[in-house]
Amino acid sequence: MENIKYKLLALLSHPIQYQAPFFKEISKCPEIDLKVLFYSSWGQDDYKDEGFEKVLKWDIPVLEGYKSEFLSNISPFPDVSTFWGMINPGIIKKIKDEKCDAIWIHGWNSFTNWLGMFTAFSYNVPVLLRAESNLLDEPVFPKKILKQIGLKSLFKKVSGFLSIGSYNSRFYKYYGVSKEKIFNVPYCVNNDFFISKAKELLPRKSELKKKIGLPADLPVILFSGKLIDAKCPMDLLKAYTKVFAKYKCALVYVGDGKLRKMLEEYARENNLEFVYFMGFRNQTELPEFYAMSDIFVLPSSSEPWGLVVNEAMCFGLPVIVSDKVGAGGDLVKEGVNGFIYPSCDVSMLTEKLNVLLSDRAFIQKMGKVSREIISKWSYREGVEGILHCLNSVVVKNNN
Image (cartoon, rainbow, N blue to C red):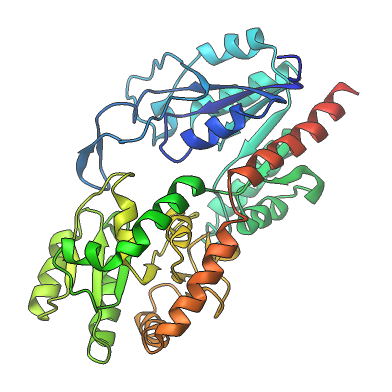
């Protein structure tokens, strides 16, 4: 342990399948002693996901490879998605007793996050803030004014901002944060896992298609996510209806939600025989669907990031996203590895699909660039960003 330079405490609402591998990677860094405090065990065991409308349990370990602890939640209405759903007064004693060099807090959307921040401020412990916010869905008056006053005041007290991408950095700057306090900690998936699965599964592309009854010669458009209004899955289905008249192709939906029945009825009424609804699939099941696909589309009207874009790019897929998808600001290079189109504009989405489906070689060329881009958008860069932040913030705090 003599190499340890920094003791870092991370505060998180609950175990999250995308965060766990990142915490594990940080814990491998000899200069960082990480401990994660969870406000709730929601997500560790079986739980009801309202978006997917399913009882789920992640099939990857969410607590292995890093130190963690659960705090007692005294909220009378426990809920990880509401402000008053997590009330964990034990955070006060933890911050006092842990004697950490810095505290990493995820956002400001819960009472415990605010309690943790103000406790840290009172003990002169540097706060590192990481959130998903961007300006793609800027609030309107009067909420906009209240947000400006509240966030500008809070951000003056925060020592460092762990930015998930360029849109997120722009958000912080808009609320008065200097660029010197912003550190790049990109929003990532477990690239090693997905890229290794791509190497294993891509040679079996035809076999994987046949496995679900899909003709081996058809190019596949893939959607992965909750079938809810914010994801706009119907926009994609309408665009597919138009392109199918010109280019024979398949559309695969991986996910579930309240819109599934409506989507299935639309496909049936329009005689779309090559539309497949595969339902919710767990983390280890997803790679087969990326491997059988040729184009990935995320048409959301509101999407702070969209980690499915990262996953698709690990499989060398060109990606089409709406201009409300946060990942587009960093991972999608217009006309190079994909396209960005105006949200809810079905005609423009149709046009982008037509461009790709008209040229199989262009699909392959774009996919190669996707792999190159995502190879430099990994946990490795995230760990380096956190270390860079700690090197800057802790030294300043000690002077």
